[in-house]
Amino acid sequence: MKLTNKLFIIASLSLVFAGCGDFLEPNSKSEFVPKDATSLNELLLGEAYQRNDLGGFNTFLALLDDDVEAAPYQVPMEDFKEDKYLASFSWQPDMFSMMEKANAGHTNIYEKYYELILGANAVLDYLPKVTDTEEMINIVKAQALALRGFYYFNLVNIFGQPYNHNREALGVPLKLQSGIEESDDYLQRKTVEEVYAQILMDLHAAEEIYKLLPEEQQWKPKFRTSLPMVQLMLSRTYLYMENWAMAAEYAEQVMNNRNFRLLDLNNVSSTAAEYMYYPTYDSPETIWPYGSPEDMFAWTCQSTNSANPNNGNKKMHAYFQASEELKSTFDEFDLRLKRYIIKAPVENSEYMDMAYGKILVGTQYYLPKNAIGVFGRCLRLSEAYLNFAEAQANMGGDGIEKAAEALTALREKRYDPEDDFEVEITDQQELIEFIKKERRRELCFEGHRWFDLRRWGMPEITHVWHTSSTESHTYRLTEKDLMYTVPIPDEAMQENSKLVQNELPGKRTYEKK
Image (cartoon, rainbow, N blue to C red; front, side, top):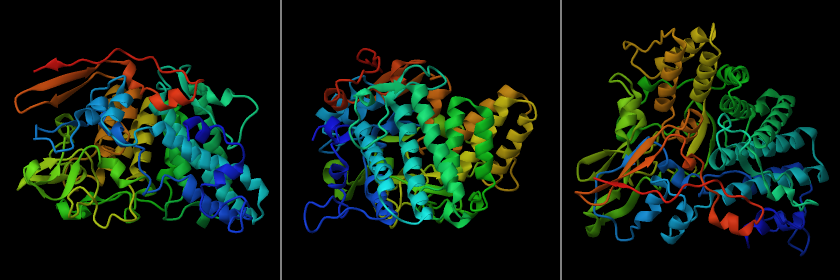
């Protein structure tokens, strides 16, 4: 079925529920209509949550920023197709067609996000038709709104220009119903500002509903959305909009939530077998885990279950590693350097600093131990501290001291108590620059860096790709480059004639070394 049919031309809710397992319109004896909100609550899991078994969302995004670099040349694996990785790593305007020709798998993240939005819309549309307790109805509605806001935030920051750079630029279409609207206006891209307005509307509505619930229903250690999840997303959204006061206010609410505390890295071993895997409930920082572990690192690492003679008898084959530039931002006393940047064996006793972080290392080297039931990403407490610090520093005045205090509180858990972790910077601009580096260190490989680079002025990035043991190609993403906004996938353009493509540069060439 074509993308427009799947995402936009839904004749009725029966078509939505027809793909939802037990929750079907009554066309046969085995089919039934959801009668209560409890049924819709389960439907959310199947159709609206970015579950840990649902991949195809991060994929190539990890290769766009400057926290990754190409690993030293290795003889490629048998099925290696260079363009699968080079398409995004070199910021090519035709990256989607290049990846398709290289059989890269599902890279249409535009479609993947809209499929989940459709699931959230279906639940919201159907909710007034069921009966249940007011509390259960509110639980379902809050989740659907929180998820939709979260997905639109990601979509607009992938396919639209940064809000603080050009809020009038084209964002993404806003589909807010599961059925057909009377006009096809919903097929057209709204401005970045309009999309942000909808994100705030959804998140604030979810917040209000969560606050109506008993406190014990506002957050539970599970994979459902929650009040602190919504508040952290509100903080992040306002931060990107440079509404510093609101960003700080919501960040502080998360910081003060008694359900969470900063993890002391002094209590986390740096031994490979004992790395802390953040997207689990074992971490006191985890607010909301989501997404597939494979999405987090499948493109930065290849693995085989046994030694392969065609691959130098290696069990792992990694084409990317943590960049030297990233590693250089950590000082020698920072515990995060050894605990956040994973070293894994590539050949015999050789270890590489991998371009993913904060995961347990299991028998397959890049897969978490006991990976069933764990997630690839999470929202966690330390982001709230960083959002608060950045917002306060930008407001100036006594915000300088508040920002320094928040940073000190975070760094106290990232350094040995005897090391110098306190932040005593009083110059506003110097502090802002320090916060940017601290954010890079703390949140590396968690999906923040590309978005942060976009909103911090879109600086030049250089990527080097090794074509042999003696030759390399250098690609440059120039300052404020058009490719800081990812093009709309070809498939989406073909299936929705109302879409307008982003302005694209010409084919990116390389400098030979």
